[in-house]
Length: 241
Image (spheres, rainbow, N blue to C red):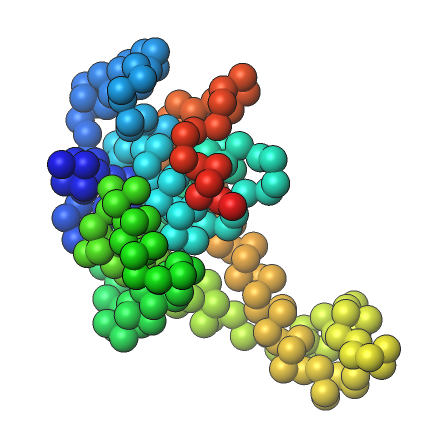
């Protein structure tokens, strides 16, 4: 019953939210997670974010389905992926307080097709689901939540960032060489749309980084995984190849 067990524990809560841990239960989880692992134990608690567990299988699923950037060559895949999962959980907890509109089913379908397209055929996709202990509905819920996060960030940090013409002109002058095509630098009029897009993206990224840092300061985040002196988790190396 691997799939059912993972659905109950997964760090990617969707429609069926995993209940928050009480302080006492959370403390017990931390103690158990620090005990020496036995060979037959598959799961491992990597972090606790505001009472929500992030598990070893969550890292595997994120990498296997391309939900996070692949780690650099030679890097510990768990250590490289865990920060992104922590940030995701912090953001998800925040947006769940405001209940933003659900994404259209067509958008979820499109994202799911993109994930399936990573695999050569349906059999390989189903094998990956079995490998990570996910059901198709649970994967769909993960993709839905990613869209909810993206929509919230777009509304809060991007839509309101409309630079003035003076700001665009200053940005263009400071980065004119970056707009060059075939060795020729376009005029400001020719580069205005691209300059606007880049300036908004830079400002949005800075605001989002500050927002996430604020979420981290307000939340209780306990990281249990330590890469130094520890072998890469079984199955993760192949997931990133």
